[in-house]
Image 1: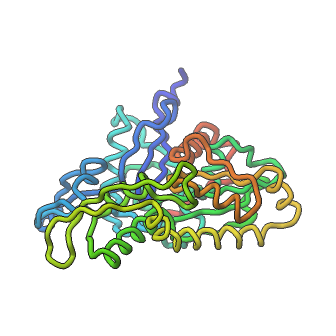
Image 2 (image 1 turned 180 degrees about the vertical axis):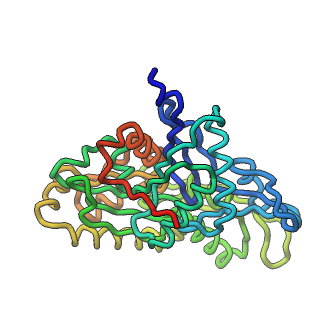
Length: 343
């Protein structure tokens, strides 16, 4: 084994609004944790990070707050993001006394230069030697196994927690892209808002996510509609309350964010050059990200675009796998990487 490989701790990070995945060179994806931090309000002391902190969302006593430092794919709380990254890096790098890692981090294609710099500085402060940024749809395409350097067009729809990324890729570049800050979180919020307005029932983020995964859909369910009992708090008298919900009304609640995603997808298709559009007719649309797991979403896109639609086998890990492949062959993918200048 070459000495550089022994000393190298290079890692790839999918720094997501809902979850953070870490790929370590030579080991694969070895961390997948919720992007949540729990802290003491008065002292600022970190209580928990990741899965343990997510369990505290909506359940913490008054002196503890559970926060999600990422919002809409960008850093909302710089200090908490830095602490979270530092902890995740500590967990995956076993030989901490060796060289600091080079890190490739995926970022939404629509973020500003200030937001990009915030991600880079946060990773540097968390212990990175060098930080390289790559656009999420490009990382997702590479993770799926698409040959991004060829002259033919490929369309990627990556629906995460905070952003939906729609991009046409050819010749190692993004020909056009649409990045909207409407994705899984907005779907969860739509369910929360619906139950509050229609039934005066208050539920938390975790419950909303569970409802979306179990009975949420974007298209009528082929096996017939399903039901689910949901527990929350009556917004009028404050008492615990249980409500039986149907997949039909949850689909109606989700319609607005889904229509916004469909509008962005149509816009991207309209902006695609004719030659590449013909490639997409042949190759179809590739869906990645946790949002692509919403029941019937691929079918709805298929119905509204008349294009083939494919949901990849493991949509949650595509971006992280893409950063890992870039790390494993940085020379091949050097054109895709943006290295932020240190201030």
